[in-house]
Image (cartoon, rainbow, N blue to C red; front, side, top):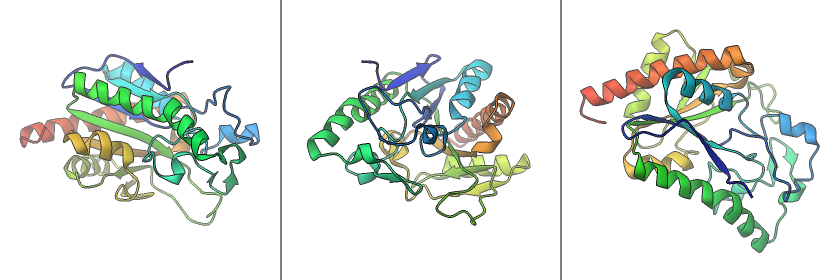
Length: 246
């Protein structure tokens, strides 16, 4: 059985670490979700484009990336294990029949795919504490459950209690002419589990990033946003250091 994570590049103390909780739409053979396979190509299964962005960030800038290797429909790693949505019963209006599990089956799923991911990330952060974490996600321009709601932002920045790095990121990205969502398309006050656990709890600066998926659906878009994120991350890290906050 393969691990539920992979590392691209080499994490370095004082470096920049990219984390992608929803990088893959892969479903392991021992999990039967009971859904139309076509749904695995949609946003409910993974964050479209983020694995490519992370790969370019490693290749172009020498950062390291920590990526999930299974679909968020198997387990949602950006949740707390006690949350019902950690093993989602539905997503954007689609029922996931194979996630109607007994308590024992649910615990087995978490033990196999959720906890090892977070334990490995804890180890990496302990061995090679970064100066900045980029938590990279993507969002759909339109939800099926709310098709009339516009989501025009090109990139969103999310945070919870630790907002300084995000404020630097927002100002920089807006200065580059991007349409930036401050706590949009949703708020990090409501959904920030991985960063709450691994960044805020350890006082590691981070920026939670949401890129609109149609902008990174191909290699050109992924390379473009990798360059944007690298420049932003370097700017944020330098601002934090200049103010004694890194």
